[in-house]
Length: 126
Image (cartoon, rainbow, N blue to C red; front, top):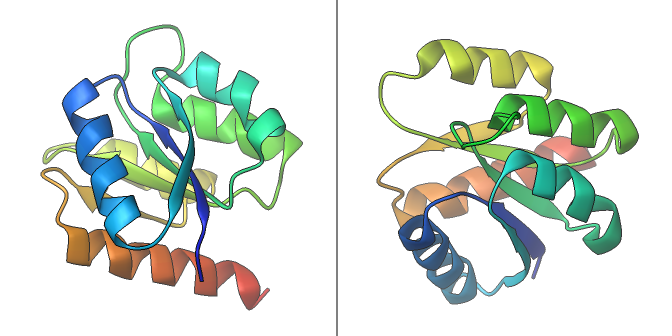
């Protein structure tokens, strides 16, 4: 199933890598947001099927805060966190706040694909 995806990341390299992986997996990137505040603003307009959210970003909102704000207005929003090693506490906070999973940097396409499948299956069984 082809999905409309929103990528939230402040790293241009990470955005390019994720965009390429999603394209290769048959999905469409409908929006790229460079920080949490932009993601919260853009989500209602684009209503993506899935969001990948970097945990650490500049600005007043980290990825967990941005995801929490998005889910407050859109309880069925599907969010996968993108994280670096050593951020276990942030990942746990994200999962408790409603993230459907996470992928570690450097992101591997097979792991991303498996996490997308898991996230989509998780929501459809509610």
